[in-house]
Image (cartoon, rainbow, N blue to C red; front, side, top):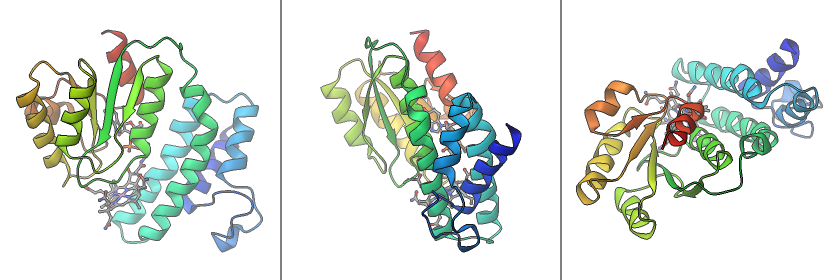
Length: 220
Ligand code: B1M
């Protein structure tokens, strides 16, 4: 099991999508994140283990190498592509919750931020927990979230941010949403976000991961 997980992490780290992918040249002809994740599922490795012990590990290495200027945007995009290929196989497990809708959840990555892998994982888990999710996408202005609350009264809002620079937009979005709809519940998450930041900006809940987001909604 460990060997397969570390192979998947390697594919994410080096952006190997599938067997037919010519990139990276030194892995040409080898199986990629797509085939190996399928094998892991077939071997009965839980989706959450694959996510935490392979995909996120690979992505963390990508993040470190990017910070150290050892890789650049194109390589980071290939890693995102490999991760998405793997996530396709995990989807049914995140989405296999009860079908009955428990409520509505509006989710968005804040203005200026294009990172959506984490947001999409949270979306899948929340859908799996039986909520109808309205996904506004990435680079979303507060006005768009507010318009969605107008159309979906009572919906809980989830905002994701991955950049320290877009945390300011998260703060402004929470302020704008609360000014218009003081009773609305806003959940925040994303790698640079913390409980302290959540408290500081007046959001209602900080979820470090999809499991915490689902646990919060279950208690609603
Ligand atoms: Co970017 N990027 N990126 N990037 N990128 C980071 C975030 C960075 C940390 C890399 C680094 O330098 N080490 C760095 C940010 C530094 C900082 O702000 N301090 C960075 C940078 C600088 C940039 C650019 C500015 C680079 C440039 O152009 N010079 C640029 C910005 C573009 C923009 O947004 N305007 C950029 C671009 C990109 C790509 C487009 C190439 C690509 C994104 C592709 C995509 O998302 N479709 C990309 C990637 C892949 C990364 C890293 C490598 C991986 C992010 C990721 O998907 N992680 C990342 C480094 C890293 O995080 N290791 C990095 C896996 C994902 C599962 O984790 O999103 O944290 P995460 O989600 C978690 C939790 O946080 C939580 O649940 C998820 C599962 O556990 N969660 C929530 C997330 N949202 C939640 C919401 C919730 C609840 C929980 O409730 C609502």
